[in-house]
Image (cartoon, rainbow, N blue to C red; front, top):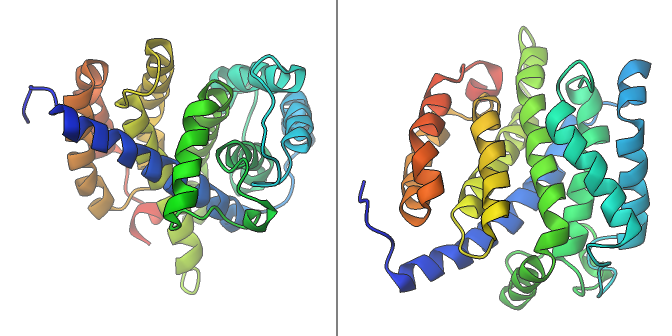
Length: 281
């Protein structure tokens, strides 16, 4: 792996590609994961622990509207934006611990779904309500608008993006355990949605960490999530996906000294993650 930085033109192209991958694969795949894992509510204790998170997410979802519905998003100082950011930041520390337990597929849609909707609303602002059922990632003009929105609203989007990644990661080992002993024949599509959704979110975070479009403090926050959550994410990855990540990690390490410093640990966590049902089914 070369230690030299990417050439300027190559680096800029990687940044544009990062946005396409991140806001296409990440948001769309996350929505598919929520649908695949939807399993109703969890126990009362989990609801109590996460009640404020869910309440503030619902208020922000209502303000943002459906994906593409509104052309302008609220500022980072908006009370509903700040309220959800505060709860999501708390969940970045507590979600998946006894303070805020998760319950596999029973809690995935309830706890991760709102952040998917919030992120999709930011990135699709001004695209029109016809896009409410899916982001038009294959339309070049609309993809350019989503890239513009990503830059414009990154301050508002960063915490929901990181929370969504952490929420997905902490659920993967539990959902994987739920699948143990089950006959998954006939459910290959649902399993693939979960696996590919996790993979899309993880690769997006890797590319975001290496992007020149974010501030140093934002990069540190992305790296903190990656360092902590790579092993949990990788529980869902197939062996082929684990191999494919090598090139993505190489590119990120060349583009970002901060990522390069953690690349060995990230590689090891991917390699050492168990390969059970989500990985192999």
